[in-house]
Amino acid sequence: MIYLDLFITFFKIGLFTIGGGYAMIPLIQQEVVDHGWLTLLELTDFIAVAESTPGPFAVNIATFVGMEMGGLPGALTTTTAVVLPSFIIILLIAKAFTNFQQNKWVQGALYGMRPVVIGLIASAVLLLMSSGFIGHEAQINSVGGFFASLQYLEIIIFSICVFVYFRFKLHPIKLILISAALGMLFFGVLPMFY
Amino acid sequence: MGIPTNQKEKLQTLFITFFKIGLFTFGGGYAMIPLIEYETVERHRWIKSEDILDIFAIAEATPGVIAINTATFVGYKVAGFWGSLLATLGVVIPSFTIISVISLFFQEFQSLEWVGYAFKGIRAGVIVLILGAVVKMGKKGEYTPLTVLILMLAFSLASFTDINVIYLLLGGAVTGLFYQVWLNRKQADDKRDEVKK
Figure 1 (cartoon, one colour):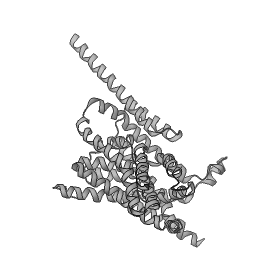
Figure 2: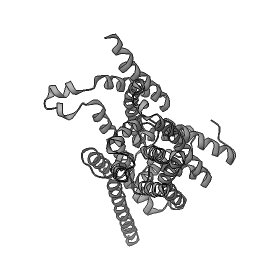
Figure 3: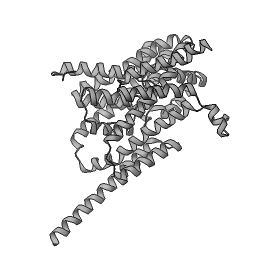
Figure 4: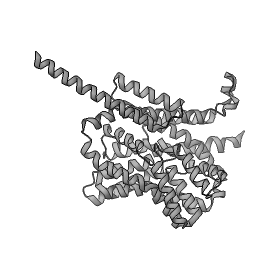
């Protein structure tokens, strides 16, 4: 019963990944590779593809493994399974939250959690900048090596985006489209001329 | 955008909005926060700007993907169970469809050079969006020595250690609860002092 196996596995992945994002990769890797559904290499390749397709990574990998193992019915099974746990849990919380939001203790806990969320998002910016703008650590053992490893084209695109986004208060989707165009310009078109 | 008057219209708007969020969220994790903030707070005014941080906190502290958790939560707040179902479907369907198609042409997709160039650019653009979200939500923050300390600690631990974010959120919640206990005590003391006078 591959479908049952797929369902249970991705239900578990959906249930036990807290914090979202790439925090779930070790668990996914363990489950998917141990089941023999993907090899480690296929998984690594897929992570690269998932980065260039929209949507949450958990959904992407669920759909992909489901398609590989059982076609469209398989993909439906895994995607439903990965979403279901949080859907149920959030539904219950949302129901309770409307009643408890004004509760002193809930407010107390949220008072401490709000700055954590801002700190987490700010740290995501820092991590993305360091992984996107600085080359592999191996090259960095001096100030000169650090500057040599900088990804200047990425930094230029980032700077242009900062300027247009904050100056013209663009819709986020417009900025995504502009950044895609800049990527093609700087990495695809310009290299043709030098 | 006018305010939808009936349930059907609300459900439709929810679905379309979250479909869009699902379609334009690249890089996962924090990348959808700016778009969700923009669509639910600024554009449709479903969520008050002071509530969105609470929703992100809950979405992060509970199992599952932040984007889906937020969709379910906002959907429920706007239109009950059906709202949460449609918002969740909306955010999932784009990636489901795209990945289903890609899995059929996996090898070919990997070698699409220009797609790769576009995504190098998008990766830089997404950082700008997240930066914008930090600025926007940071402006709404309540700054006391305690919250600033929590923020700095969470930022440093998340940036420079491998700690799971769930512990940071738990730490924040516990600190907030202790603060509340202290506030209660203080209020009780103040009252007693007043009575004595």
